[in-house]
Image 1 (cartoon, one colour):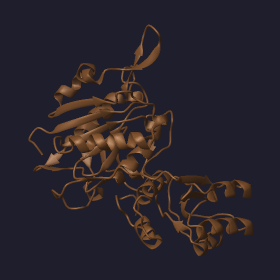
Image 2 (tube, helix red, strand yellow):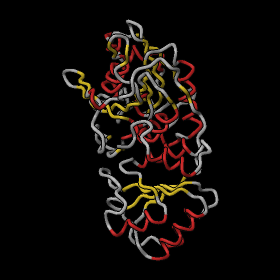
Image 3 (tube, helix red, strand yellow):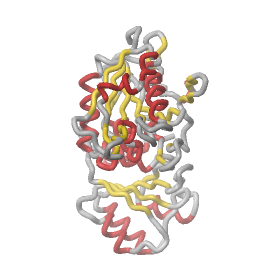
Image 4 (cartoon, one colour):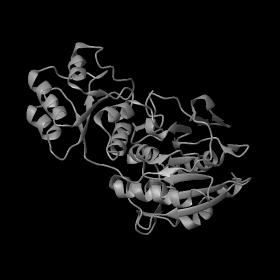
Length: 343
């Protein structure tokens, strides 16, 4: 890392990059080449900043695999030149996007920090400036040339989280994200304090990062609810285009015990479909076999996701489905922590 860190900012779209056109009263993207004019406080940071925007910024609801690949491609092409990366996206799908990116980059030795805002950067009460300024500070933090953060993080409202541990819980409050099953990595107050014992524990090395751009989207998410019908279950898990299912269950991984439910899931598993068990709760873990209502899932071959979020489970499946693994190896890697996504 250089004495004066070089930080690359990528704006993909989202509220943070919007300003109000006072003639039309409509929110429009502003030119990120003029970011230091919009936020003069950036000049106080001890780093060099380079800013790039998607040619056509997108709403976070339009985030997809192609955009994931664009983000990773841009990071890859600038990886050797810059010391840290700040990715600005819409908050609605930020946990999904940042979780996927965490799997797409192997041997990451530099910070990739996602952030955004609940209010536009031009709004009087915006949270955008603080989120952006502190995200840049985090991305430029280093000691003896070694970056403090060497993983994909998500910074929002004074807290830095491991990205693949987050879920957006609130659409209206500035404190929009939470990481219920893993401690925060840093907290911004009068000082910026890092919780170093919870950071990426892999030793620093200079091996090249590996950027994986292939993702398999043949995945479905099935959220159980009391009264769900056999037809609905079958339409998802027996769909020939579906290779993996994230089954959102009750509590610590519980599900109906009726015969038809068990038979449908077993038929799908026998057909080669991977079914993983994720709790609907925002905190806690799946413990298959803890109650009678999850023993049957374990017996027929449903895999426990333990304390992974739905977002992380989807991202991990997208990543692993491209590897042409045997089912035994697939299960081994799914249950293993690859990017700190599981305890």
